[in-house]
Amino acid sequence: MAQLWGGRFTKETDQLVYNFNASISFDKKFYKQDIEGSVAHVRMLGKQGILTEEETQAIVDGLNGILADVESGKLLITDEYEDIHSFVEANLIDRLGDTGKKLHTGRSRNDQVALDMRLYTRIQVLETDELLVELLQVLLRLMKENTETIMPGFTHLQKAQPITLAHHMGAYFEMFKRDRMRLHDIYKRMNYCPLGSGALAGTTYPLDREYTAELLDFYGPTLNSMDGVSDRDYLIEFLSALSTIMMHLSRFSEEIIIWNSNEYQFVEIDDAYSTGSSIMPQKKNPDIAELVRGKTGRVYGALMSLLTTMKGIPLAYNKDMQEDKELSFDAMDTAKGCIALFTGMMDTIRFNREVMRKSANNGFTNATDAADYLVKNGVPFRDAHGIIGQIVLYCIEKDIAIDDMSLEELQKFSPVFKEDVYDAISMETCVNMRCTIGAPSKTAMEQVIAQEEKYLSEKWER
Ligand code: ARG
Image (cartoon, protein in one colour):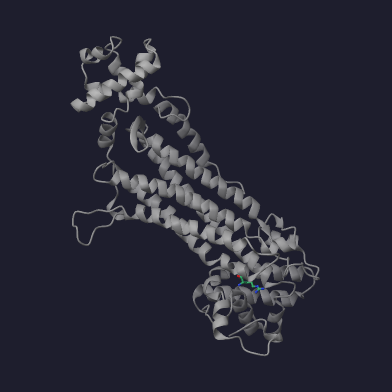
């Protein structure tokens, strides 16, 4: 049991207490950020004359040596230390003797861990953003390829009006684009450095907080030391953004599962992204989509957990806050994994365009347009709605589509029908007459695609 704080104690910690308190099993995940933070802190101490030049250089070299040895596998992070901070400090002291003991001058583990978690989360925000860009690129390609791929659009999971596959993919494009904007907002708010907050009330050393903030690529220091050590808002915001991403992926997964079902057969998931059954040889299951849908609960769980952990904590640091890590790490890894797998699945999925088209034809998706045809020819909308309703009933009985009826048959329901009705209610007309921005027509979609292409070509200015 290697502890940093043994001085005031006369008894050994009970082993169960030690285990309960220790965090090394999970905070070792940010060893790199812990060392980077320490290097910046020590450089600042040197610049301020709090450490000599020689001491500063020795500690920086020592820390970089520890980092290199951990990365090469030469130095293992083991459970004999309480947390990652103790591990690094103890190793530094092993290497440098008394000089190593000066590392923690003007710092507390409270501002240290606040910094580490922020640095780690900041990287996660960036990595999640990059993964979303890759997903958006696949969606944009599918949009470009499918501006003429007609399929039914649904409300209540009932066929409603014809759309195109490009339009359907475009809806998800918008969702994931907003998800990126949320990440960018979070980044802007979180990118301030808590180091120098001390245990809660700053320190008596003449620290240069602007300097450490700059070394670590933050916009500046946080402005209240009690808030600096106890703020986890940025993590809650990030978990909330990840939850929204998962909610979007889960909706998308649900559709892929439906589209992949034997009844729909709109898509075929690539063999590389499907799994079989141990007993039923015919099966090819959409397990990836199901798992993404299922894992959504884990990410929501992490958000609920942290919100609940934080709600009763008085200022400033309390040990409850150590609970910010395990579930957050899990949520970050889960969400990133899900985005990457979903992107791969969508990049390789095959669309059965014929089946989609037939499904649109056979579902009365042109009923609204048939009613509009009557309206354009002078029939009041409510009457037109009633007439088409009767026609739909007639077609259901005969198991045909409206387009399959002869002109005489149509005219029995209304004398207003003329030969041009067939063109007016064709799937192509139904889609391409919907040409306001945001609607499914080819021209409207092409305008949107051009905008989205420009959006994806622009780099995010941090
Ligand atoms: N493992 C702790 C955490 O994750 C580090 C901070 C410890 N500070 C303290 N005063 N015990 O929050």
